[in-house]
Length: 291
Image (tube, rainbow, N blue to C red; front, side, top):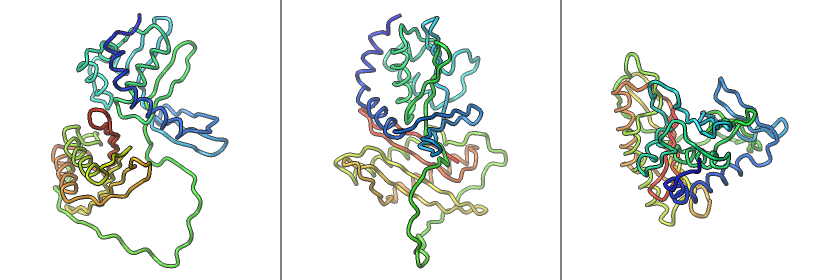
């Protein structure tokens, strides 16, 4: 069946951001001639000959069943809904009355419209792109995210004649971790939101002409009940230059508050948290990864 008018309106509203996502993805894998998918590891590797172009974490997004003309979302057939980074897709569908994003099996009349839905879904979930795999006439779609430890090739830097000056380190007290932390690594959405807002505020103040992306990196060095937090903030400005920004005290305090509450509520112990922000028409999309 043809897609509904609410979906068409939503697609038009998000078209600029979705196009940018597609362009960034195409530039990132430019020149690759082979794609390897490891389902058990949830990884996709784009290669050029024997070189790795990009390694991405691949999360199953949807399955297009050509014979039935439907797109089955990741949660189709599940008895209990497990919290997922894709929940923002359903939330957007509920907000704008888009049935194709709310129903577990959305009716689509073509593979082109299946791509339309998955592109919007990948953008709403903060993905760096999406990829399809063919299964006869059917298609399986995956949202792609930067994978920790992705391998790249760079020229060797000049050998230093002396050790670099050590960076100044901040140390704060944190409560001890829960005795039996749950499996959740990433902090809950309600804990991330204040930090993301403070991050965006700091970037906007430093780059009034606008920014393309911002990356907040938090490294946690824990010893007993003490923790040293290393906070770095970088952004891609309107001229596409990478800028290193000085974290404000408010931003550092927001980091401490998020980590403290995450541990207090039983979140798993983490050593590194990365927030990637991309501005949108209504604020910014945020992708959170924890190790």
